[in-house]
Length: 304
Image 1: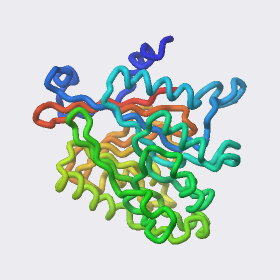
Image 2 (image 1 turned 45 degrees about the horizontal axis):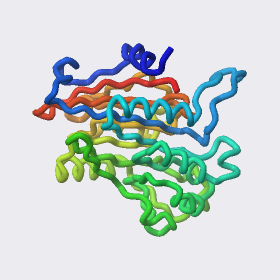
Image 3 (image 1 turned 135 degrees about the horizontal axis):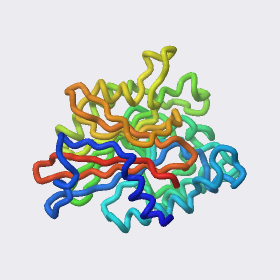
């Protein structure tokens, strides 16, 4: 099956968000369209899984992902390619190259932005800093304060893009490192409350900068069980904030066929998506905005 045909046939597995409006009403000459592509927890998986792998035979791989991304860009040039962290650790490529290969390949695929996961500290904060020259894309984290580390200046709290006249604000959030990462690995990196950080980011992006779309790149995890009731997750973040349109998650390796729709503090709908791990899937969210900035989105997970 041709990849474009496959994409079209998987359109039935979608989540739609649109204030009761139909997709056809947005697909007019005066509406604006932007495609968000995303990955998470790739964990240094450069090659496809082998044919005899019991769970993921011949799936994933950077070459296939690059081909899929390029075909989507030809379909719609207004694309943002994002990653939700844990780029590092998982194959001998990381053990040997320390993250250089991962950053170079992501740069070749023209990633626009990434946040930082806990495993991205596996060679220490200084090891992460050493790989920064190999990344042509930028990093965002609103709740990690790197000012007293070598990463100071390499990470911003947010970034604003303008695609096809759509103003998109993207900010990052990371999981608490204490108890998860050895202190000597993250050194003086300060973890701030993600909920408070998100509220600050929304104020800056939505109220001050008038962004049409606000996206959170999160490495907090999709959800947690009863033993971690007080732990912030993507679902809780969506419920306890406002003005976030999309949360792209990571950390928990949660495979979603389509985004979860969550009601926020104001009763408005938020998309929460995560595409598992190891580069097996590519997430795709298409946003359509009309002249009144009313939004509709279609989201799905595509097997690479």
